[in-house]
Length: 342
Ligand code: AMP
Image 1 (cartoon, rainbow, N blue to C red):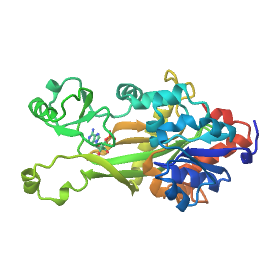
Image 2: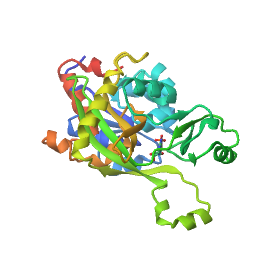
Image 3: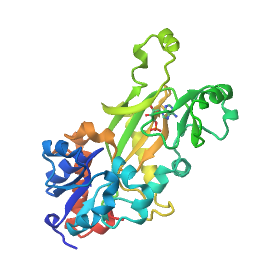
Image 4: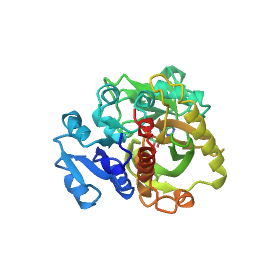
């Protein structure tokens, strides 16, 4: 394997965090490839972070161009849209191009009960889950399995209310019932270096969700009269800097999640690279985690020029996209690239 980054390219599907990933790769000296559809191409041309375009009619046609990526010695970076278009099972069993990260881990993060088993073992404070609607004894959030971006979730406070609300979703039998945590949403973005075994906190965000983040603009009386239902459709991300005294807790739980990823079945290398813990901070400062993303998250996008945290550690603007490119560069130059692929 070559130890010069000139012999490699970094490629990803043009969506989600692609601009950040490609900019970061270019800043570290890599050639960049964007896999585009005709609809998005002009965006990626406009931002000048792409050396080469590979066009396909739809992102789900990824496998029709994979041979081109292999011929170009491209390292493929997965992100949220990549995983959803290409598919967890296809990535695990069919992908042949160089894949950055631990593909087996995607099975653990995409299955709610496997994810819970992992996070519980790591000692995280998780919301209660209810096996049966009859057990509901506090406000709950009901999440449908196929729900995209938080659309169609609903809140209920009792078994009777659940039964009433679920009527609006005929045929939807796959859902999780989770304790609804009242507090502020917080998403913590980490980077764990497989090369030096160090965990970095990169940044934090919260999501800007429609209509949840605008309901407070209407008086309670009008909300009730207009029969408004809450939805959590993600539209963007808002940066956060946390109370400094909370940082030890964030480091501790991140380290524990990494430690407990090392014995997950089907993911021999465990979790490494960028990941995110997603939860709610309650008024007693407990971080109640409802999800993990075992890859780069869109909440890192406000920090293309680095975050207040990366500014402390790095001299140059360090986005998560750039951090992972730097890790790949270091691995290539020291003959350890294989350690970062799966
Ligand atoms: P998810 O699809 O699981 O990422 O959740 C979408 C959104 O629903 C989150 O960004 C939160 O605003 C909200 N949410 C999810 N789970 C909970 C919970 N257990 N308690 C309160 N809010 C939640």
